[in-house]
Image (cartoon, rainbow, N blue to C red; front, top):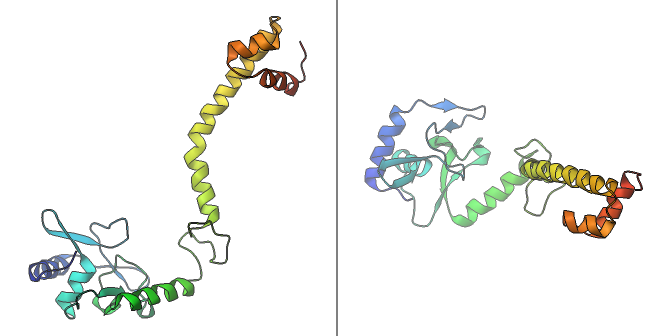
Length: 192
């Protein structure tokens, strides 16, 4: 994803013809394709993705030394990886980039979700409340299907018991244990 001179020229053309949308922090947000990692990309030629902020830095500021990163400088107000504003960018070593990222994370008052940083965290580093809510929503269809199955199973068990079948016969017919039949029977307060 390193910019060649042709990519830099393409970036200059694209950026000069791209309407700049500023956010509240003064970041110029890339209006086109944003990757899953939050960075803006463009394709100067088919099958070649270029990071916009790197190409813009080379086109407007200076060359990037081999192995260095282009940092979105938190201390200059940059809060978005999709930013391509040259004043928010600086070429730094990977170690310096990692150090700054850690400091920027600590200086944030709250997570992207709105919960404070001192809030409970899950093992993956994301917000535990948001993770629980995501899991609840993800599992909701299966829970609804299970609830329907349990209602059908309970109705079948009670119907067979009412018809005079023994617990073991009901268990065999429904495909559950005798204990499940007994608990179902007792949970509804009915004894046949």
